[in-house]
Length: 131
Image (cartoon, rainbow, N blue to C red; front, side, top):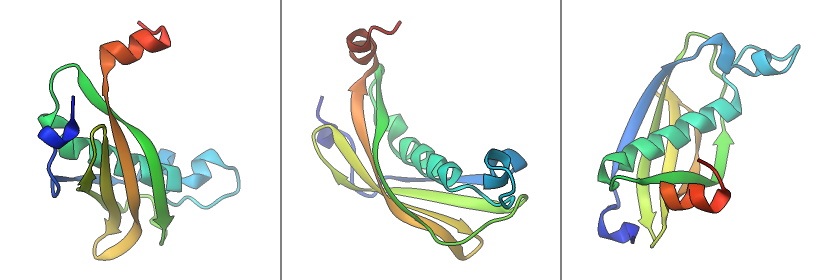
């Protein structure tokens, strides 16, 4: 399957998250501030990227994250509403590339690039010996 046949540049999605305590760096690392953790921001960026193209995928096919190049620019406290966006910027045979950003209101919290690979779930599981 060739992603260029059905994924188009400009496809996009956004997600909203009210930062809970269990998504803060202080939740994971003692004595650290209770602010939105970088890995959790990246998770939302990856999820938004998947959301942007999910409906275009054929049954049995998904995408998995393969690259992240993210800058965390500003902190967000517990209770902050974070809006994460993803937009397709390039499509290769099996790789889809995204521009991703995160905001609290107009303030940019993070930005960067993300790539996802197109896989057939059954073949992937068979190759890994998973069920």
